[in-house]
Length: 196
Ligand SMILES: [Zn+2]
Image (cartoon, rainbow, N blue to C red; front, top):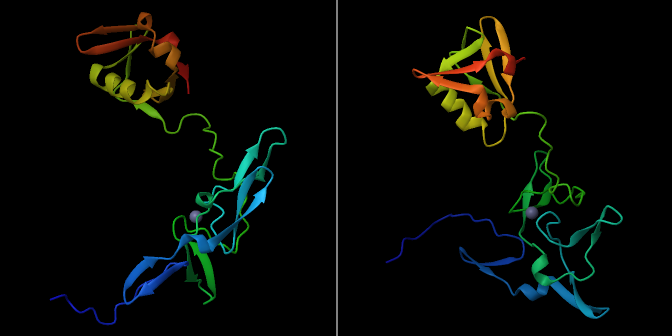
C-alpha cells in the first residue's frame, strides 16, 4: 500500500501539467511554432522563455553586438519558467533553472563576460622566511607549499622578512639557477626579490 500524502503542495512549473501530485511534461510543440525563414525553418516562441538559458542569440563579431540567431530551433528555447511571489506579494515569472526574473531585461552576452582577473586572485605567501648571507632563507616545506599553490598560475609569492614585505615573481622562483636547497632549507638570493 502506498502512503497517502495529505495536503502536500507542489510547484507546477510553467508549461507543465499536474495530475494529483504527479508532474508531467506537456507536449513541447505547443510552446513554439515554426515558420519558413529563408532556406530554413525558424522556431518562434508562443510563450515566455528564459532569455538567459535559451540559445536564441549569437555574437556578431563584425558589429560587436548580440543578435537574434537567423534560425532558432525548438531546442534553443528554455521554457523552465515558474511563477513566484516577490516581497511585495507581486506574482512574477522566473526561470527555475537560473532564477532569472523575467521582468528584467536580459542583456545578451552578459553571462559570457568573464571578469578579467586583476593581479593575483589571492596572495600566495611563504612562511618562515628569514635573511642570512645575502639570501632569503625558508624551510623547504613552506617553499614547496607555496610553489605548489603558485607555480601553475604563475603567481607572485610573498614573504615577510622582519618588518618588511617582499615579493618574488614566477620568472625568478621558477629559475633553478636562483634556488639553492641545503639542509632542508631553501635559499633565494635577496636581489631576486622586490619590496612588496
Ligand atoms: Zn534561465
